[in-house]
Image (cartoon, rainbow, N blue to C red; front, top):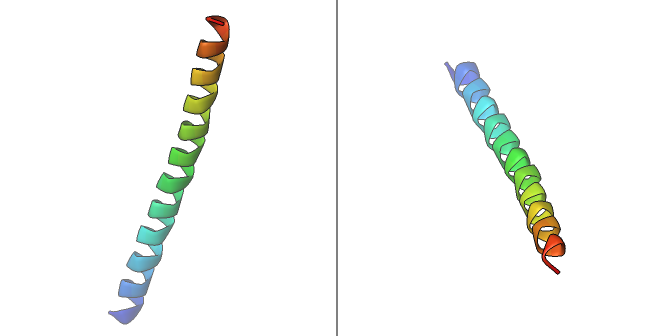
Length: 42
């Protein structure tokens, strides 16, 4: 039972870290998009 709990906690932490990772990548791409978009209008 305890092993199952540890495995689920590990799975949740992995899922959270991947979500955070993808969010960071998307955020960086969003900043790049905004920079390119504003650069076109200068």
